[in-house]
Length: 104
Image (cartoon, rainbow, N blue to C red; front, side, top):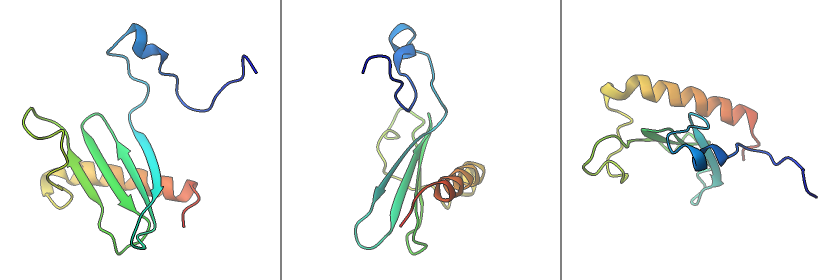
């Protein structure tokens, strides 16, 4: 029915202003293979974090900055001390997402 509101964030600002931003992080969830539980991927402008609800799977953190290979997920920087603050921030968001969602 016309006029019903849909959940989510409108993308219409992008049509009139290419520099517009709707939110800082996008989140996607999916069931993983090999009994890894649920995967929660979070993408900001410069980073992508992938966490798993099963502790046996180590999280991933990718840096998308730079002009070389950065837009391809080639290097997991989760253990690099230079990214400790970014890692901590994403891990906090991950915990919030797990607590708020229905995880397996």
